[in-house]
Structures are given as structure tokens and as C-alpha cells.
Image (cartoon, rainbow, N blue to C red; front, side):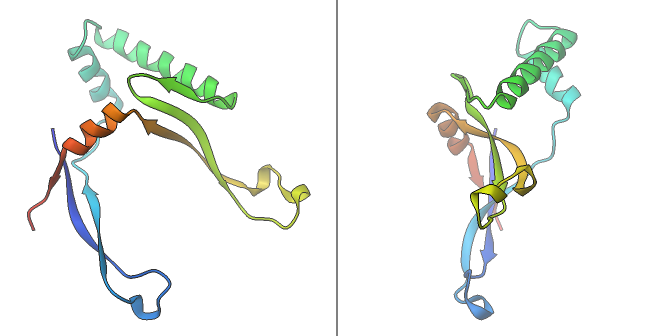
Length: 128
């Protein structure tokens, strides 16, 4: 299992004309795993049948959504900590902070150290 990356050229931010060229690592995605393939892999790695794997994933999703919508962090030893996140538009006064100023609600995952290490060890550079 490998995560491939390549170097991507980036201009220097805030400098007219781009300034000195810098390079950053960018993931080269190997495709997508759809729900059906994900549940099938779950059932292959366990004693769960495909329908049981689907049901377990659906329950996991529902419970995770419920907890996050209650404004709670969800700590899972195998994954890490999931929490809700959003960005908001800057306004001039406290009274102007309303739901309309909030944008991009999302889920953030802060992985465990073990999870991070496994991802790090999977990195492989793509040959140019």
C-alpha cells in the first residue's frame, strides 16, 4: 500500500510576479473507492457479510453525525478525534455574528499517532 506524491511548483505568496519559485509535495490520487467497494472490503477483512458491513457503517455514520451535530468531539482509539469545523466571514460587531456569517461546515479528523505513522510510511515519490 502506497500513497504517491510529486513535487508541485508554487509561486511565493504576496510577491508581485510570483517571487522565488518554491516546491511543495502534492498527493497523486490513485482513484476512488465507492461505498459498495468499501463495504465489500470491510466484509473481506472481517466475519461480517456484505449486508452486515453496510449496516454497521450506516450505524457508525448515524451515531457520528448525531454526536457532531450535538457539538461534541468523538474520540476513537482506532481513528483519532473527529470534530465539527467551519469557517466564518469576519464582521465588525459581535451582534453581526449569525448563522449567515458561517460557511463551509465540515468534519475534521485528527488521526492518532499510529494512524499518522502508517500514512507517513506509505509515502512514495513518483518518478518524474
